[in-house]
Amino acid sequence: MTRHANPGRVNLSHIFWLRSLAIIGQLITIAVVQIYFGVHLPLPAMLGVIALEAVFNALTLFRVARATPETNIELMGQLWVDLGALSALLFLSGGTTNPFVSLYLPSLAIAAAVLPWRYAIWLAAFAVACYGLLGFESVPLNMTNPENLFEYYRGGMWVNFMVSVGLIAWFVSRMSAALRAGDAALGEAQQRLLRDERVVALGTQAATVAHEIGTPLSTIAMLTEEMRDDARNNPALAAYAPDFALLEQQLKLCTSALARLRSRASLSTGQQCVDAWLDPFVEQWRLRHPHVSFERIGTAPSGLLVADTVVVGQILTILLDNAARASREHVTLEVSRDADTLIFDVCDRGSGIPVALRATLGAVPVESTQGGHGVGLYLAFTMAARLDGSIELTDARPGPPRGTRAVLRLPALDAAHASESKLEKQND
Image (cartoon, rainbow, N blue to C red; front, side, top):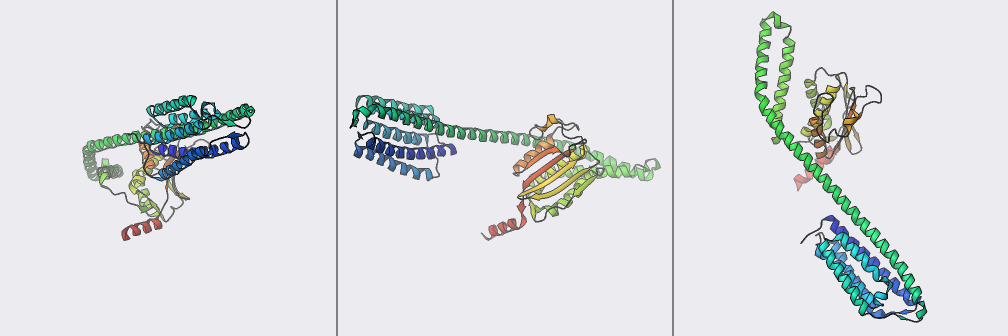
């Protein structure tokens, strides 16, 4: 038995309100034709049908309030009751000669929009059967002045047409909007799944590369140490001693980066105040790019937490590395707060982002003008989305060199509020 998710609950809620409007409309129609058109209707029987319809609608209201989703059989039963109540009212008011007989159509349109085709066919067969029986047997209209029959019929047709158009347009359009929203959510979920699969594949490749380059790095480190020792005793190599020391330092950074990559799965995603975390992070990054002119603008906001220092550090490293490759002359980092958002602003003075790359950067790995493959930015965008954040890439300034401005926005976590929440959990 097929069950609906949220769109199904919207359908049942709509059916409840439509039935409520139908009950009000039925009472108004009975009063108008009884008073103004002189039609003598079997009021006890018709009001009894409407009363049963109101009781069923009250039960439907309780059903709407329940958390469990309804089945397609249940939705079909709801519409079946509506068609049955309409058939009973038409039987008591002229049958197929009643101008409101075409109100079968909006109910069938709703069924076609809400239910699978096999259930809609059952309702259509029931409506056809009721219409056929009404053509043979019904209570004829008893009018004080039969000359008003044409006016009554024409007025009823107009009202019936307006009601049918309104119901079909409103309900079907709302259902179509709900279906489009569901399709959009499904498409977004599929994109997230595809992005996660790509990230897993990249992570597997990164682990493989880390394993493969471990031995060559050890060999290079050993040779560098030997060359540095030779420079102490060989005057011809003495001038290269600072270069050997720098090379050894960079090799240590590579080795530590590989160690962090290997142990990433066992690291806890700790939280830390941004003002206390940022200075060591920047110092570590500057060791990797000693020739880059770097500037910290302003001071980091106090009292805010970095949700995941490892992930945020990786994102900022990617953004700062890209800025350093684009422009060694000037790279800036500014950290600020805007309401409930923590903002990391990275700027450089490079040539800027080509127009052809702006739509795809961060969405898929792409070739860059600096020789990269866009994998870093792709990972940065993905990790930012996992933290409920975003990355925006724009031009840093209007004129050449335009440069690039990368803005990382993350939810601002208040340190005091986080401490209170942690204390409450411990007390619980």
